[in-house]
Image (spheres, helix red, strand yellow):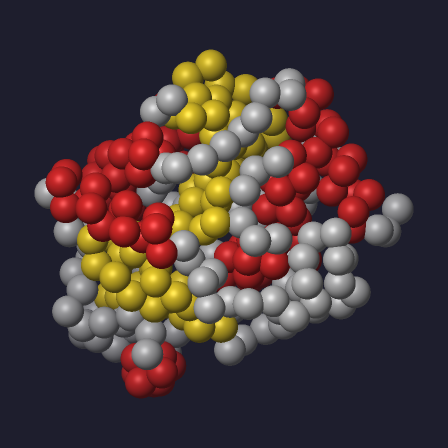
Amino acid sequence: MDKLMDKMQEAAMYITSKIGNEAVQIGMVLGSGLGDLAEQLEDPIFISYKDIPFFPVSTVFGHKGRLVVGMLEGKRVMCMQGRFHYYEGYGMDQVVFPIQVMHAIGINNLLVTNAAGGVNASFKPGNLMLITDHIKLMSESPMRGPNYDELGDRFFDMSTAYDKGLMELAKKEAESLGITLQEGVYIFFAGPSYETPSEVRAARILGADAVGMSTVPEAIAASHMKMKVLGISCITNMAAGILPQPLNHKEVMETGELVKESFTALVRRVTNLWPV
Ligand code: HPA
């Protein structure tokens, strides 16, 4: 079987057989530091990626590979606990397949979260950043190849990839919770090496505020299908060259851990008030 629509349908049917026909309102991709939120869902149903037809399987240490469906703040949500990264060797089509399956299940709202390096020197590790837009200069588009008109147009708008109303909601709720929410442009680098100081400087000149290795493919696929997207980064470290010390994955994980509580509080509040 090689037609995307058939694969999507088969994966969606498998998931529906486990979760029933009741609508799921929001899809969530939980990056480093936020994965535990999936374990706070009420009446959770767990589905391992390895059991879902045509799903890739996550290989990154610290990422669980499963969907969790349940109630959060009065909404029925589907969380990806662990995502697929381009640097793991997956094709862009595989990276975004779960988003397309969410859409096949009837989900039109997507929250994407990630760990990112701060490119904007005024940011501090531990800050959260609302993604207002993104830059992708690297690697092919996930929509490269035959277009599936059932999903979206061949050439599609990206000027409102991140939903304005959801951004306003996130800003307002962060403020009322007393959480600093930076705003900015996320630039995608393919990884898995962290960037060089010169690449970070170039990213800043291009207009980026944060750098990371995920999220952009998912946001592009979601835009193709006209899903409403909200993106939030956790600035786990300053990007290469800003501080004298080298970057390491441990720091990224540790900061993610420290910010978990405020990140979770914000996501909960936004979920509660998310118009569906
Ligand atoms: N660069 C790329 N990806 C990242 C970083 C970074 O500095 N921090 C967390 N994810």
